[in-house]
Amino acid sequence: MEIKSYINGRWIRPSSQRMVRNINPSDLTDLVTEFPSAGEKEAREAIEVARATFMSWREVPAPERGRYVLRVMELAKARKDEIARTMTREEGKLLRESAGEVQKGINILEYYGGSGFRLNGQTIPSEIAECFTCTVRRPLGVVGIITPWNFPWAIPCWKIAPALVAGNTVVFKPAELTPWTASILVELFEEAGLPPGVLNMVVGPGSAVGEAIIQHPQIHAVSFTGSNEVGRRVIVEAARTHKKVTCEMGGKNALILMEDGDIASSVDATADGAFGSTGQRCTATSRVLVHASRAAEFMERLLAKAKTYVPGNGMDPNATMGPCVDKKQFETVLSYIEAGKKEGARCILGGMRAPGNGYFVNPTIFDKVRPEMIIFQEEIFGPVLCVTEFNTFEEAVALANNVRYGFTGSIFTRDMGTIMRFIEHAEIRMVHINEPTIGGEAQLPFGGCKSTGYGDREMAEEGLNFFTQTKTIFINYSGKGERAIIR
Image 1: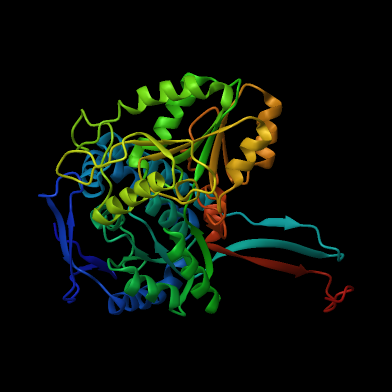
Image 2: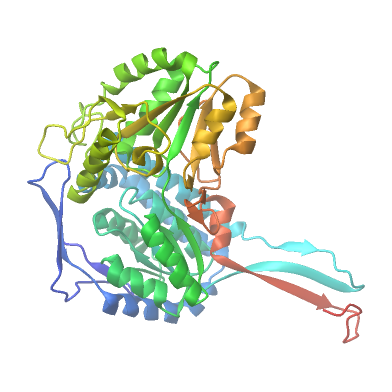
């Protein structure tokens, strides 16, 4: 499969000599895509096209802009199985996980498809007699969207759909590891009749395409999901040219089991959060904090559950966990495992690569992990779980908060007072009670605080509002060209 970029309604093959070869991470003999990488030239061309198209696109009524998204939703339903299979072959996740992601993207498209009717402002009383005041929301202009490889369908859906409905034109840079899945989404917009130049996709490295997006003066906003290292650069460079920016970056999420929590359900939630999607999601459960009185029983059950996760090809119905996405991520995960061993954490399961012709790592559990250890503090982005015991609720919350990230977390308890105190004191922005740390819904805000998130939240109304600017309007019908209050 050769991947092309999409600019001004045409699929183009860049003239670059830099070729990208993507291998199926579950089968290293399977060449999935090969294509010439786009660069700064194509990115600048896409930005100029989007700028030229903006004025005509913004004049399309918002409900009609939403109908393009609804048409994409219907087209995606018809190709759901194809999209899932493409994602599994390209990124490695289990076929059922890919199907779940496709459905989530469809739900997001459905939500934002109706948002053209909800692009609301406010009417607000004026301090002045015979003056009507209100606000309206208007598009920003050309926006840049930069997405990662771990959710190559859902994340582009929840960024592109609100950007278009709000009236912006888009330059989209998907991850080079998963361009085929992204290409299908763009194909669907093309099939839905979206005018040329409204949505443009440039497939190339962050060092060229990403840099062009964040530095170009005609880009008015950047929505980025990826690593903290790159995210910090996006924030700094966007500030230099006064761009609006939102960044969703890493997570180091904790699940807490209190002394009255249900062990069976907490074990299931922990395993699903830690090993589902091979731990390659920012909401993954990477730490579990267990009350000392429940630790022995919890660990016994968790080990039994973790052993049911069998790494394998995502297309294999017998596999229960996929591979790391590529060699680099595979080696990163293994290096963190070795660091945990050297620091003295007790590796009680896994800790090594798994057999097979792919980037497979066995589900790994470290016990007796102390908060100063690297594996407690840093995002691993793999199937590695750290277990730490505590004795009091206050200690548990302090441990949960003792990382630079602030994304999501969960607590298992029956006590409503404990639940409310956790909601209040946990330094996170997504709180789960008696369920895994993972998950989000189209109609609910998504994102974190501290080093996890910067700028507005994504999805829901907040995700739409990010791609707009507020205009404040004063209509003075007094017949006098003056105001009684000086401002």
